[in-house]
Length: 141
Image 1 (cartoon, one colour):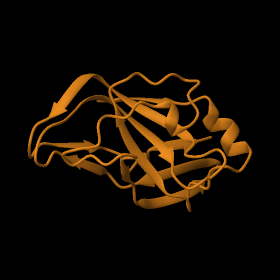
Image 2: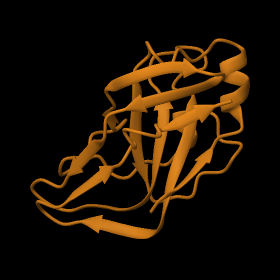
Image 3: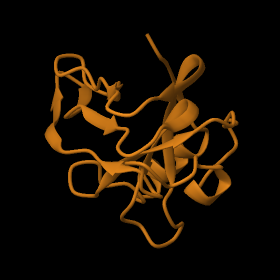
Image 4: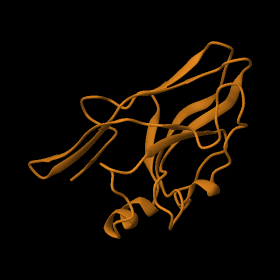
């Protein structure tokens, strides 16, 4: 299972109304270079080469639910699947969640998943980013 790590900027960006998690376009980008907690925008991340089914900037996630219950906010988005077509994709180790909507700062980072070691998708293979339809991709208390 991949380890979820929040970027330091996310809390400040929430407080300053940069993110609208229920209305903005959230995306996942792929990298094989370790992000650091102080990265703040997508251009700080070295994405894998855009080819064979991977597009620069990654893939958008579909919002399922954005709700607060008993003082706990839960964001639920649908799983995102990356598929290698026409050649391999990767190597990759990290999947970065970011907000594609704001223009200042452009593409602010939210969090990343560390898969523990580099993987390469061979033709026809997929990587599913499991966003947990029950617990959500993130909760805020």
